[in-house]
Length: 505
Image 1 (cartoon, one colour):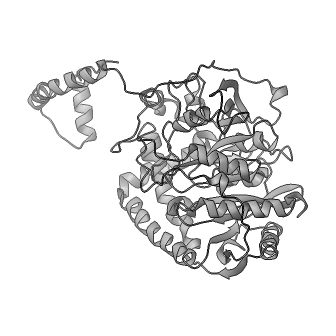
Image 2 (cartoon, rainbow, N blue to C red):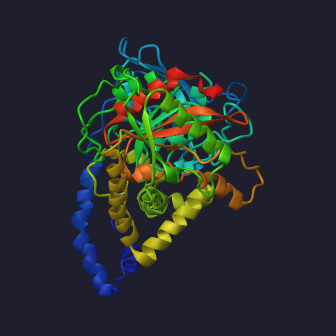
Image 3 (cartoon, one colour):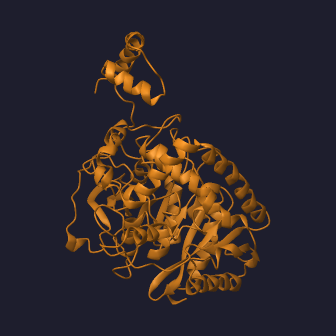
């Protein structure tokens, strides 16, 4: 794809966008000045790309029939066998469809991307295969992952594993469902506002959003570098810890990784119970305007179980928790608009692994913008409006304020081992009907993120643990730990899991 020297009209168009006024003589002068730079672009175009090797043979897989995909959780079924031995030998793993699996279709929930086939494996995919896992398919996610519901994907809504017609949570919708149904032992999810924890909570499984950067995001379509997280979704705590153990650690590409510790054997740190562990119940996580009393009550029961298991439980107030969703908004909105949309999925100015084929696929999305989900349209327009009229000041201020919010959580964690609060403020909601007004569609996508999104901007590890049913639908308790202290979360979650059947709580 050679770069062509601009025509005089194209240079005038670029000048106009930059606020420049050029005479005809200026145009000819600048065309001569930039020719050498255009030539340099074509030198780069002729060089081989420097992408990691794909290690394991595979086929593209197949699109499953409706009969074998009743909940609409799968995008592609495949079978990619990993190493002949390893800690994940015998484990079937599903991959969220914003994660690159070389040779296998990827559309990230949006028709604009349909037909894209990446040529590299994400780091997490390589690590899973190196550990002996079998990749059994790609799972549906929300359109460009911008929804906490499960109704915005281009291939239709994903249904709750316990009750058809109800949301499975998002954006890692399909990943939550296939694990809950036993069609995979483990799945990869992504989390920018709660998109691992929300579907895990509403599907009745375990979902861990690790500390920011602990698991490399390399080879996963970004939303915004400051809030991009990826992590494990599993049916058991032990599998969750084992999966994180395999996928965590530096990869030499991802600029999100700073202060990342060496490999930790999370699977060997589950025992010990919670006796004497100090757990702080966050008052502001309950009784929110959008909260349902029955859902809060189930989480309160989980508090009582931790007490019976010997934990020292106290209620604390962290007022900053209530403002955190507002602070998340400029980061999320402007990240969506500037990085994922106008930046063709990557943006600039970071030492990342840039997959140019994905950039090419996303470039020119404006020609098909009407195919975007209503949530993506709304937040993209808002981000463009803010950038034009206010610049980047609110993004920058939000990042600064996020540090103060993190310090508020840290102050409590300095005297406690964990924070506890509801993952979601409500039980799974009915899926919007096909003719739902835009307002209901939008509401069902974002109404539930208030307790989850704060920890994406403060980067604390947070895990949802199933703790009961309301009207036959799952409820989750969220445990939050110190940065890089996933092992304490796992110890508490494991003790909780072993103590009682969550469906009978």
